[in-house]
Amino acid sequence: MLRVIISGYSGSMGKVLTKCVNEDSELEIVCGVSRDEIDVPFKTYNKMSEVEENADVIIDFSHHSTIDDVLGYATKTKTPLVIATTGFNEEELNRIEDASKIIPIFHSSNMSLGVNVLVKLVKEAAKALNGFDIEIIEKHHNKKLDSPSGSAVMIANGVKEVLPDSEFIYGRHGRSDKRNTTEVGIHAIRGGTIVGEHTTIFAGHDEIVEIKHTAQSKDIFAQGSIAAAKFLVKQEPGYYNMNDMLK
Image (tube, rainbow, N blue to C red; front, side, top):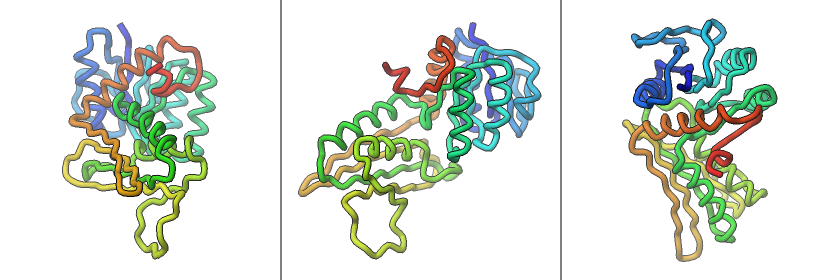
């Protein structure tokens, strides 16, 4: 039985993760951590540093501002950590990387297996479709905080791995010059209850190729994080992502 701490249990993804963990006979929730309290059938804390229990793995669906507290507990107790939170700045990402020298850390901006396969396909298309203009459009619900989404940035970074001269353009409001051939346009749409949709457009002369992923429920992200947790507990300290697990 894998003992799990859920960081961010009271958020929308935390609630979905709680449901999915409870449905998995191989997992057990030790406790939950969140700034906001809701009624749940397990012990809860407001901060990770207050947690008294030990666990086999932490799954974090909280907020990037809590990362120091999460890393502090994880490194102190040598607990593997799955980070599914988005919106990190460069300094926070550096601290995550430093902590991965002490404990195994799995970090992905999108826990969907399908999205991570999409990134692989986008990289292959970027190699093959020389001279095509590339635009990334992401759509999410009206309560999503970060923009563009971590997944859109992940896709764009995948393009940049293949095309190092790529320049990210976040929307085009106020721009009066024509499109540069090295541009990768990134556009965010927020509305309604859209779970998540990412489309990468390759526009060439008289032809268009689109690679698209649509999330139909949040369960896919929770299930992806659970798969990551089961993978991570078998690993040595280090920084892991979906590419490592998909291998």
